Length: 102
Image 1 (tube, rainbow, N blue to C red):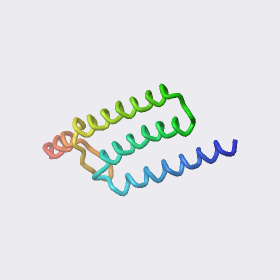
Image 2 (cartoon, rainbow, N blue to C red; image 1 turned 60 degrees about the vertical axis):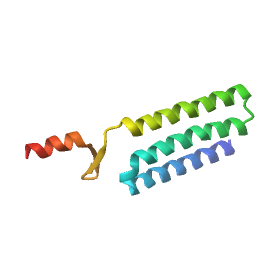
Image 3 (spheres, rainbow, N blue to C red; image 1 turned 120 degrees about the vertical axis):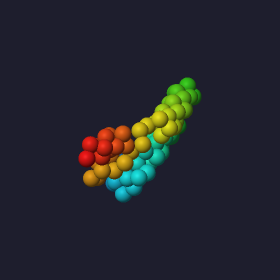
Image 4 (cartoon, helix red, strand yellow; image 1 turned 30 degrees about the horizontal axis):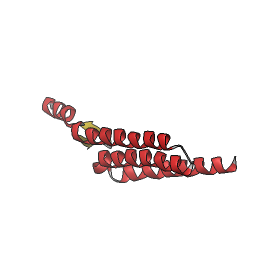
């Protein structure tokens, strides 16, 4: 029970640190989120190995890393370019529309 609580606390502190780091680097937010997604997927592979999971289960987790890597790359490639407006991300198309009306 204590070990589970320790891991949950470590996860919570890590998540808070990750979110704080994103706020410090708003221009690199998509790249940081993509890297975070890959780290999360890789951590599941590590948990499977440490937990003595079967080779089949480790293979499933590795397939998940491949799937999430593909989604991260697609997200970086196809997402709308974002700009920061008053601290909030705003797609350029929306910002252009607002500026055009003024």
